Length: 135
Image 1: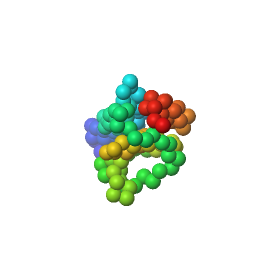
Image 2 (image 1 turned 90 degrees about the horizontal axis):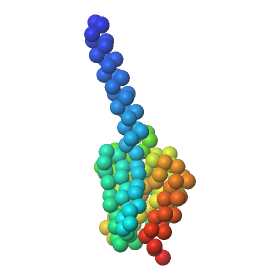
Image 3 (image 1 turned 180 degrees about the horizontal axis):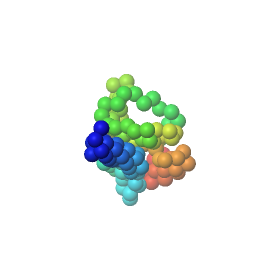
Image 4 (image 1 turned 60 degrees about the horizontal axis):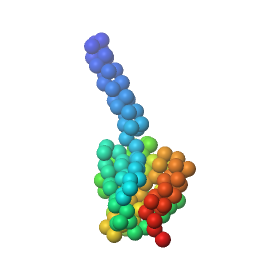
């Protein structure tokens, strides 16, 4: 194999490894609690904004059934997209190895997400419950 061909192959391989590593680090679920809404984001700028006035329930789920991915993306670190369980679609923004998940239910949708650790997820759940002021 010629030296130029080998250099091109190694450069392409290094770029692919670097891009994969960057996506695993920067493309992770996140949430922001604002004054009147919560914003949940996932991989590649997928995003759901939920006004507090539309939230019917907020609960913690230890190990929900994942179902089938309808659209979205998954990596070793995290998944985001639309999933389906028993013909019902829901949004998922989750770190793969972290449990539990926070479930937000509205009239029209269900959104499940978590944070990078169990402790951060439980704190986010508490903060969200306080912000929404559900009974």
